Length: 338
Ligand code: UDP
Picture 1: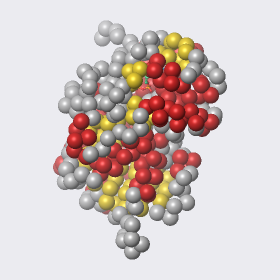
Picture 2: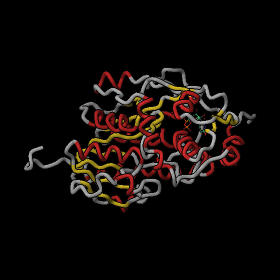
Picture 3: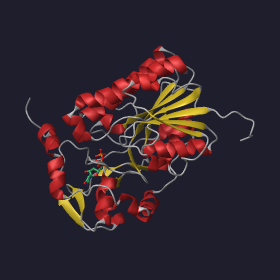
């Protein structure tokens, strides 16, 4: 970029998180001035180590739940990537209200401030494929919605709110439903979270990998750098009001993952209501934006094995601890008469 050209401003909410930090790096590399906002509940400055000192990066500590803290955050922004939110199934069953406050009202707060400060900002909302529940596969964007837990519902309501308000206030908004993102910085903190972090820590400590059920269930894993690239591609579109599925389109079984990690296996009980397979039909994204996934799963896993020390200070989950952590899930979601 020419020195005299003014850089466009891109805001990334949740920019210090797993996906957000990769997106921040990509935007800086693509010549943007990036404003990262994060409440640092799960995100961390360590995630932004590679670019922390970049003069084109501004890092602000703010929580989207607190609208007052968002005053000025979106000024001059041409793009807003809204990734701030909370994940994980079990805590959402324990405390649905917290999920609504963050993922729904927090999204409303972001919209309110964009409406005032930067109504020309293009918004890209990070949605979750969990809204499809137990879906027919490969799953396209028109598939029926089946929210199986409060987390899924809160992300879906946040998406509906974003797209609806985008239409009402004429603010360009698109949504990306992310399948199973994995890659560097996929750190599980206190809660029992995504499988990759669980397995990497187990492998690092020479403990068995806790494979759920028969391990033949499949997930559409997509590398986090491919996720960040997809957000960038969608931001460059002139169309709005669209939903895009974001997955590799090539699901792999949990047993295949365990074999690639080359760990000993311990089978643990099935989780009630869990999809047997997730598989994104990603044709819309590919056809409309030119994006395609670049990191083959094996390469992504080998890269993670080279970085496995990053998981040293994360919680180790044993069979018994997983049983305790998911008890509420089992009790609440196991099929029962109502
Ligand atoms: N999984 C597993 N062992 C674990 C955690 C998860 O075998 O300790 C499996 C789980 O059954 C699912 C897959 O890994 O098929 C992905 O689980 P995760 O919670 O990461 O994502 P989601 O189920 O929401 O797609």
